[in-house]
Image 1 (tube, rainbow, N blue to C red):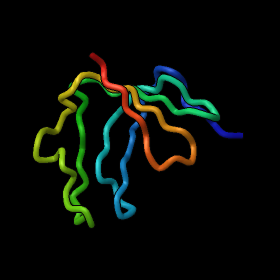
Image 2: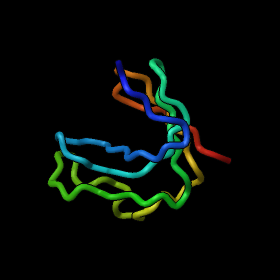
Image 3: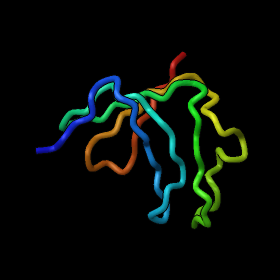
Length: 90
């Protein structure tokens, strides 16, 4: 039985590169089901960048800010996909 995150729960999302955390930040769970993980990242969310070295170099956002500057974003991830879709607030 897979344990699921609860709506409203704050979890840490880690983007990995070279099997090491490249970017880490807290997100709020919107939905966690067998078909979809939906997460929300608010404007001003703190971001932590891995120290590297990384094959692609440092994360490009590292030179800009250590917090999420854009409006909030809803992140949609399907199990097995190696990418997520982000929908920005207007």
